[in-house]
Image 1: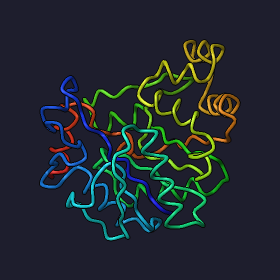
Image 2: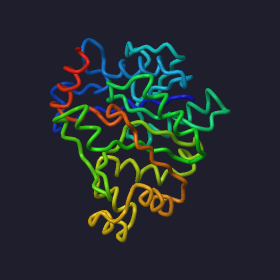
Image 3: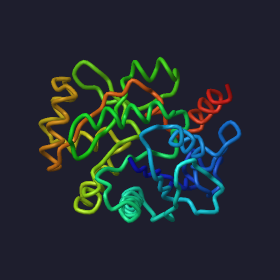
Image 4: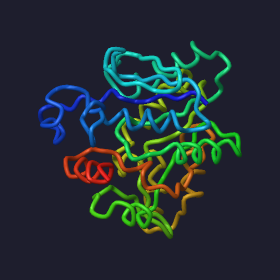
Length: 254
């Protein structure tokens, strides 16, 4: 499967990560001797299920490499526009591509094995979008003190993963949906609002489980999504704050 690496984050002065980037791309922040995104590209290179790779948000002279065929798309100014531009490049390079594996550049602890699990598990079924989630128990066992954001539903608390798969047609024909998904990615209240007020009440009182949420998302977006409960905390351990960067640095320095 072809891969889109989202590397378009440029923290502004009011962002906690600005002191590390000084206006440059977050993807190039040093983590245990390598740019953060290089760890991700190395994992993609080690995966058995990955083919061509498109990095969106960095220039070709950024210095990062991959053992798989690699191309670059300049930053388009936002998460959604970057995803759409990246998907268009994937289809340009491979017109037969039905799906794209999307990976954020700021999850450097992932491995090829984890990527293969996501792809192989997703491709057991035919859905439009595959979203990864990680339980609080899994996250806190692997990364204690990471202070991730969790959404409480019936029987479990979940954090959104930064690896997903989507059908290539959705990036062009459903741009409005991608805008809503992008806005809600880090905001549990916006996520709940996407499901509707009735579902929000069910979330608040923990009356709905993961399957129920997925069905509501399908109704609201007009798509056929599937949530993958991932056994790997690494897919949701992105670097948004300095203390998370230090946790990752210490982990990978080992």
